[in-house]
Length: 131
Image: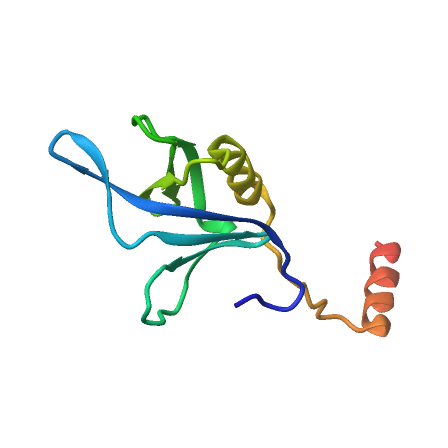
C-alpha cells in the first residue's frame, strides 16, 4: 500500500459524517485512515477487499474541527470538495488535524531532472560571464 520511501505518521479509525435531518450522522462501514508523510489513505472496513483511496497532501486545502457532538474533522480539498469524518474516541482528533495541516503545507515532492549536462552548464556559465 505504501510507495518506496513513504513512512507512516499515524493510523486512525473513522466514520464518514453526513448532514441529515439537521444533524451530523455517521455512515457504515467505518474506515481506516493511514496518514503518511505524503498522503492520506482511506480504506473501508469490510470483508470484501476494496482498493484504498488516496489523497495526496498537495490536494488538501484546509482541515478544521467539525462542529458536532462528536470528535470530527472537516477536510476541504483544493477542488472545494469536502469530506467530513468522525474520529474514533480515544484518539486525539486535534493532533490528527495538525498532522493533516502539516502534510498539506509540504512542498510537492518532485524529483527535478536537470536538463543540462555538466559541459553544457559550463558553456552557459562562460557565456553569461562574457556578457
